[in-house]
Image (cartoon, rainbow, N blue to C red; front, side, top):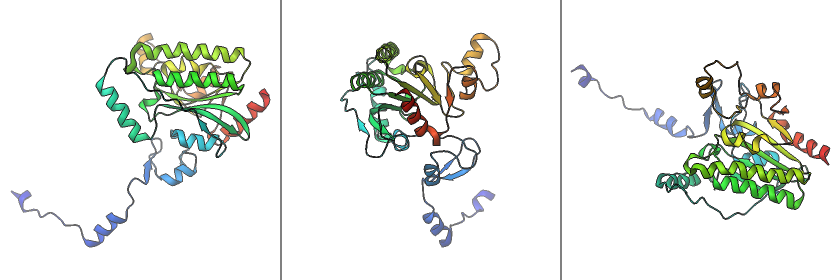
Length: 278
């Protein structure tokens, strides 16, 4: 056969050297414009594509660097773990794998810190950990943070990114919606400020509970925000939805969001809102 007569071309010494010199894992492709971006360039640009302005999702640590004054963040040391209520072996293995991969214990990090010198309680969710889904531990950490804000009489800020309640924990994950909502009612009664920041995407039980209950609701540009996905809604109601449905811009136009804030302006915007409330 002709194929058998074709000799495999061996890479030249020059090509071998070139392959060795190419750094691995240093580049990332923009989902919007398909541009190949050097990761360090992306990091220095607040995880925003320098070519088209597309917002990449942020790791908890990067978000803390952006929002909280250096050296002021104090994490709440809650030694809690999910009880795996449905006794799913694969769930336990997945949690272990994600903790090793992301360096996170759960889908939310909570603590205290300063924003331009102003003390706050802050919670930041991460889509890299089970798509930021809310289970027992996430619900407990959010609730604990709300209670700490009441105790310390501090404003509360929550950055949400989530696919919703964590299905691996069944109905107990849905109970976190009621628990966090009840805690926020106490925060409101105490006259304390709660700022909710919606990032891409914020969906499901998180949207239906604490993410929507802020005294002020901010959003990053073009973030997708909703309860169910657009396709599910269209199939349910049997109608086509308007263009841009569930984007932050659509939500702002219809009164669900108070203001869309670019990432570079978030820290100063939060600081000013805290000042106004004081």
